[in-house]
Structures are given as C-alpha cells and as structure tokens.
Amino acid sequence: MHSQTILITGGLGQVGSYLTDRFCTDNRVIVLDNTSSPCRHDVPAGVQLVIGDIQGPEVVRLVEQADVVIHTAAQIDVNRSLDQPLFDCENNILGTLNLLEAARRTNLERFVYFSSAAIYGDTLHTPIEEDHPAQPLSPYGVSKLTGEQYALMYHRAFGLPVAVLRPFNIYSPRQDPSNPYSGVITKFIERAKAGQSPVIFGDGQQTRDFISVHDIVDLVELLVEKDEAIGRVFNAGTGTQTTVNRLAGIVQEVFGSDRALEYREARAGDIRHSVADISAAQGLGFVPQVFLEDGLVEFAGE
Ligand code: UD1
Image (cartoon, rainbow, N blue to C red; front, side):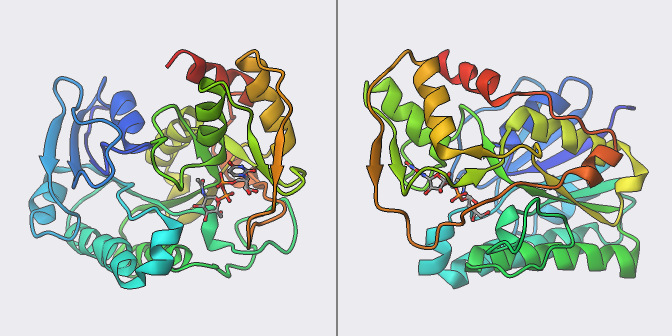
C-alpha cells in the first residue's frame, strides 16, 4: 500500500484509536474527534489531532487534504438515541452528510463508512447476510442506515469511492467500562476483575458474533486497498456465534474464577440470535484472526 493521508473521524474512540495505531506507521494520519467519548486523550507521535465536530465547517479543509476518509465518529449509545432522537440524528445523519458534502468534489481514493449491525433490527434468520431486511429498532439504527444510504448514493450519483461496513459486537480493552451501555464482554471482565461472577440476562442461550477490534482494523485495511469494495456493504463479524453462557465460561477461565454464574431477568427487546454471514468480506480476502479465547486474554493484561 502506498503512503496516504488518512483522515480518521472519531480517532480517539474505541475503534478509531486502533485504526490510528495501525495506519499511522506507514501513512500520514489526521484524527478529528470532538472528545465526547474518548478512550484516550492523546495520539501517537506524528499524528495530527484536530479537536472538532464532524458537523463543523473545518471538515472541508481536512477532507481536502485527505486521500482516504475513515468515518467512525458517531453518537453510539442506543439508549441515548431513544431518549434524544434529534441529537442522534444531528450527529449521525447530518454529521455524515457534512463529511460527504466535503468529499463530493475531491479526488478521494476511499470513504469508509462505519454502519452497524443495529440496522437489521429483529433478525428473520441467521446467519445474517447483507441483503437481510433492514428494520432498525432504535433511532440509532435508523441514523446508521440513513448514513449508509447517503454514502452509497454519493457513490452512485457523484462517483465517490464509498465502502460501508456493518460491525457486529466489537470488543476491545479500550471500551469504556464506566459507560452503563458498554457491551457484555466489558461488563463481564469488569466484574471478574472485581472478584464477582458475570450477570447473565435471561437463560444465557442467546448468541452473538463477537469480533475483536483487531479483526475490524484488518477488514478496514481491505476496504481501503481493494477497489472491489467500492459501492458495497460488508458485514464485519467472524461468522461464529457464541452463547452468552459460553462467553461467561471463557471469562471465568481467563480470570481463574469458578464462582456460580448469576442469572437475572432477560433484557426487554433483546435479540435472540445474531451472527454475520461474512462471505462478502471473505471475498475480499478477509480472514478473522482472533479467537474469542485469545482476544479475551488481552484484557487480563490491562
Ligand atoms: C449490540 C450493540 C448495540 C446494537 C445491537 C444490535 C454493543 C455494546 N451493543 O447490542 O449497539 O444496537 O447489538 O445490533 O455492541 N448481557 C448479559 N449480561 C450483561 C450484559 C449483557 O447477559 O451484563 C447479554 C444481553 O442481554 C445480550 C448479550 O449479552 O443478550 C449482548 O449484549 P450487549 O453486549 O449489550 O450487545 P447487544 O445487545 O447485542
């Protein structure tokens, strides 16, 4: 890959920070972040940090300098989107549109848009392929889907080289444990570190496709490199489903605990089964590398 200038929106966040670390070794990286939910406050040496909002006018100047835009910045809290749908809409839809407008008349080589598996809503079948009906259950899901639609339209109408990814359940040690809406892995690990057993909502037989942030970064690299990715949508998962019970067992193993698991009432609106069909990503050469067991060991060292 030749050296490029890469603008990473949300570059201080859970995913953006790992993208920054990977891309900055061979490229010039500019991070744009409004510090609303940073998982770190600094960037590696040589990376330019711009504190600002994706809705601001400065994105024009930043996008003009870039060869590649990787857009991860978003309001990511599903519950907050239910409480404040307008805030979610402004951030995620208008913010994305502002970036796309800035990109419209440039010679960008790639615009990578981070969507979410939340766009699918209740699943009719698994594995979930990209053509599965999109029936989001939250304003967040609608805003992510709308962002996708705008991005793909900018490809069709204006030739912008857009690629979209729909991450399933991403985990990384940088997810903020103090956030009540953090994912189940972060919750289980926090409890394990405090000497407590995992709390399982429902019977624990529900499944998810847990993907390490390192695999997400690998897939983004492919979306940037491969021209076949342009104008297309890719599920970002491992294709492997894991029950919440099994996850709890692995966490207990990693932290050497044999306490009894705690079961509580199922969460209202919880999706029963979720696993990605990743044949589209595999077609680009994507091979998930991180087994859940190994991915969780990284947390024990934090
Ligand atoms: C995930 C996304 C969400 C998205 C949704 C649909 C995360 C953090 N959330 O929600 O943004 O809208 O997919 O694609 O990635 N659980 C427990 N104990 C706990 C916490 C959770 O048993 O302490 C269970 C939940 O009831 C659920 C499963 O673990 O069945 C996963 O929960 P969670 O990590 O919150 O993610 P999703 O509900 O899949």
